[in-house]
Length: 265
Image 1 (cartoon, helix red, strand yellow):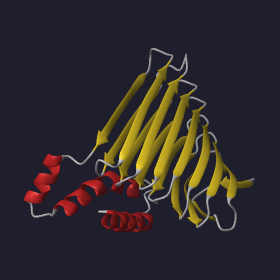
Image 2: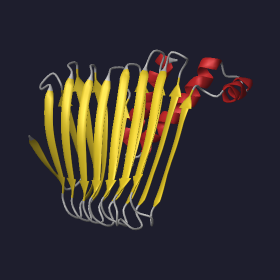
Image 3: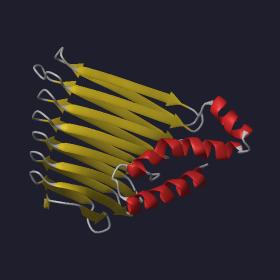
């Protein structure tokens, strides 16, 4: 296991050519604030286990960027203490098969979580996300936006649970998949387990090809159909570029999204 103590902003790069399995533990120190960027790269299959402990009153943003030119399996667990705040973002733009299993435990009052995912699926990608509210006055927002290319497949399995006695907990999920054509397959499974009455909970999901009226409108403004589809696709993905509040990272991710969308379209 590799242990990392987080007191501020950090950037880590892990290469599958060096090691095909990673066991990572991040400890976010009490009352600390920072951005943590984790970049995965290399040409070999990579398996990652990641444990993140967020102590009381800490405020941290995590971004996981996958640049591995092969399949990836990631299993992650976030544990949030009192009044801690976590934003986790997944930027998943590679064409290979990916499985990501995420567990988020909001263990004490005041814990707040936001998850933001942007994915391009050319192979088979699966996101399994489970959020647990163990105490009241906790808050979670899980937002997934993905685009599935021709012959690709993407599954979003999103589960939010509010335990009994967790008064004033708030949990919400939004999942949207845009399928490029009829050969692109998508599946969204939104799940809410609510065991307390004094809570707020909601889910929203949409799945389908680009709206013909939107495409027609953009074409009426002088765009070709591929250009119109590119614009719609980028609208799904570009919000991921701003979540870290890092201008340099925003520029890099924007260029990457634009290049990959242009090639695919």
